[in-house]
Image (cartoon, rainbow, N blue to C red; front, top):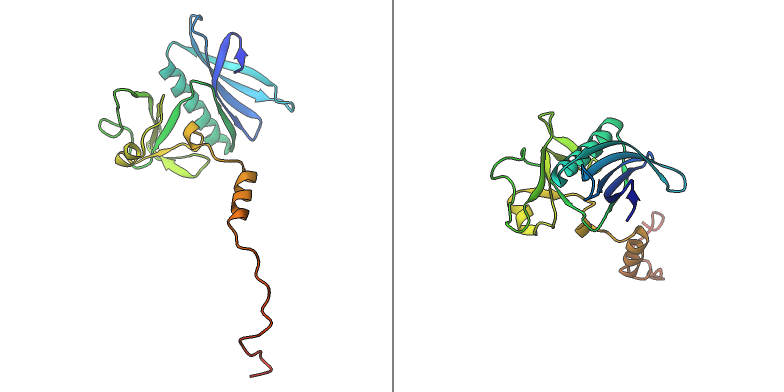
Length: 196
């Protein structure tokens, strides 16, 4: 886990433009949470700047999500990757309605860390443009399939429980499931144009 100015990076999202955002935590700091913007160099080193400091994880998560979504929306940038530290969060999108009382699960052992309704009173493209959502929620632990179905929530593709195998592994698995090519038949079952 990377440490920047005493803050452990809990989460970082990098765009294909080389820019990104990070969420950090330092329990001994006067403001224990921070969100930064960063620029990633050719060798993967990061230059952090424009830090915003706060006192709660809920605030930091909300600010991080807003900064990522605003950058994606304004610059039409695609997410290259999202890295989660040991305290990674799970994001769910509300695709059917704005988030309000009774529209999201509140398990006693997994209350929402943040609730965000997008300010522009319309649905916004999220998840690299694959979904349209009114708002989003974040949780410390994943929701069950039933909870997502009951409240019509869609998980973010970068959630830790949604990790997908690499493209190489998927291609290998796909190749294993194919039948071997069949030998061409010696006998023709149909007449060609000249035989008709």
